[in-house]
Length: 218
Image (tube, rainbow, N blue to C red; front, top):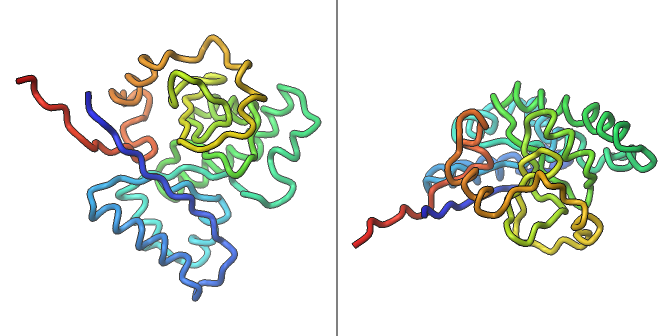
């Protein structure tokens, strides 16, 4: 079975002035990844992308668009009120509607800038199941869900394909018992990632790069 490596970079700093070099760091990382043969995923705040466009950093945008993947790291990041703060007293349907109103424009914006936006990446502990459902309705995956499934870091939740990285999820106990029957088994979920289908637009999802090819049997 082939082994895949996923490299992803939180790309958040839209506050530092242009001469601070923050934009140049993104370009350096993107170029270094490409030269190493890696297709990386840049998890980008919508505000960061707006600053890149406003500053005329077409070189950064072009490098990511041509060689890497872009994931929305929440449209407005931690600017208050955040999406989760707006959802504090909302029910299920209202919460999904709020998430869509906040993040769908961010998806459209990244698609217009980079040509695609494959996922929404959790920022900090800003998480709610309604946000994951909104991703499903938009046809987007969700990266770094606070839901953990013991069998696999890749699973379906609220009809969205979810990916977890190896970090400590302090809020896991709040959601562990709510994983619906839709959740795939580890084996089935692994097939979704290792054998991506163009119909699921997973060929470049999260910058998956083949790390080791399977060796033929002796």
